[in-house]
Image 1 (cartoon, rainbow, N blue to C red):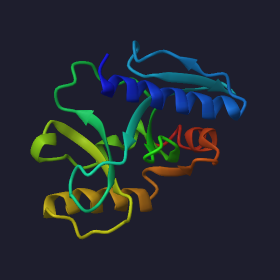
Image 2 (cartoon, rainbow, N blue to C red; image 1 turned 180 degrees about the vertical axis):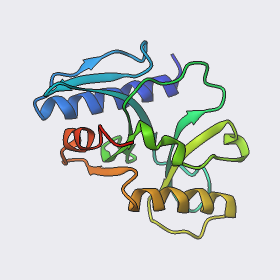
Image 3 (cartoon, rainbow, N blue to C red; image 1 turned 120 degrees about the vertical axis):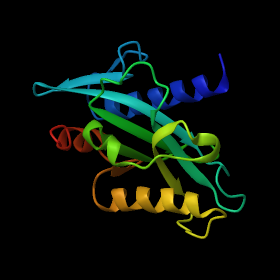
Image 4 (cartoon, one colour; image 1 turned 90 degrees about the vertical axis):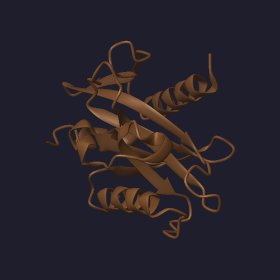
Length: 174
């Protein structure tokens, strides 16, 4: 098992544990059905694809970032989730924030470039919110991601916030 798989599994467990702490029975599917987790609440089924990111210097050697590939060009099977939950952790693997992206909003996110050119829709945030990055293409990706966050197309939930509320409130977004 590679490190990426282990980190992805950790993200799934963090989201599952958080939702169960909120009193929801969460089923862990392990992405065999096009998503990782699901729960039902008041007749609504929420299907979650979890994405995980540690802090890294992926785009600029001076600014730490989190980055998530929401959709890959080479993905053989389309995700059948209702939401993507992006987990941002610090250097100690403690959750900083969860970011809830309704499936209907994924195509609003920009594509990446360079070595990430197969990412057709990505989400990028810098730890220090500093837009002075080494390459303008990365600044553009970040600015678009930030605008979508500010416009409510992605919902930031703090590590102690109610993740289930964000998921259920955005379940019907088209």
